[in-house]
Image 1 (tube, helix red, strand yellow):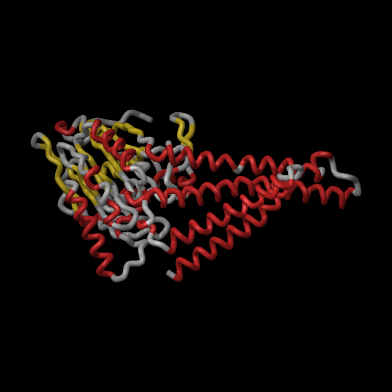
Image 2: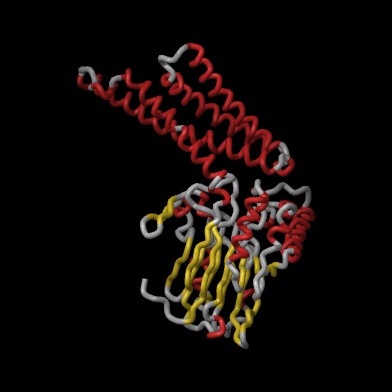
Length: 421
């Protein structure tokens, strides 16, 4: 608890210094307004700072799960929106400081009055532009929560595998990832996403980790909803880094282990076959291929490496096709490609596309997460091996999505050579 309090105090101090600096821009932007209006704006500014600190205290000192999903959503959304708005305003404030510095240097070095565009009288104009720009992320946050969080999209790809048995030609594999049940605030909206999954009528469904944020009981409201997901060849699942409860201060090691045990029971209760460094044979009309599932294994950012691919792979060496479920896409380049060339298709998640970015088919594909994860969303191929990174069904932290909608992936497996890209 003391560690959490220390974190809140540090963040509150940072926000105070940021607000104190930006307040100078507020003062400049409100020049010329009636005194009562200026005073009201100034009071609102510091009142919002007080709300941010109160929200941080409530979220960190109380049990977030006791606050209720909508209260958690409101706190996280409010802090995120205000912080991003102030970053936008800070950008214009820095421009203003640079303009003043240039004007001072001009006057000092030339002995002449600076040109009109360096006139200090323009400070109020720049400050007002900055204040107006601060509204952009606030509005975007609202849109990302109310519209983007549950704007489920089906993405389709075709995977060509030369050794795919004819019996599996045309198999429709549906992938889900990163549900993060503890972040949901609208069961009704989640139900619409599940209905979209069911309508795909996939032959096989694979879930690639992070069912919860931390605790098995986050699924209490949603277990029956996700139990609706069925497929003729089964539903298979793995664990992601959040499923282990590593980000919670448990009262004892036994409590943490019990949480993981209960989470495994949730998978079983929903009819999902949880693979823990194991494999299953998928059979169809006398032919079979191997499905492997490992525990979390990350090559970046000190994420845990519980996965043991050697154990999952053992006994499948002669399979004509291998499909691997591995939560973290960094595993593909770090171990799968160099050491397991017979693994044809790896399915991952983890990145969420950072829940923010721009994707315009054929024109643009960008998210800040790409600077950490080169393979962060969609289909990748090197040689005869494929990786598909699902952008996630849920959300974490910010309770919404901007430009990167939640994803349901449908992959069609085809026998043959892939066409030239």
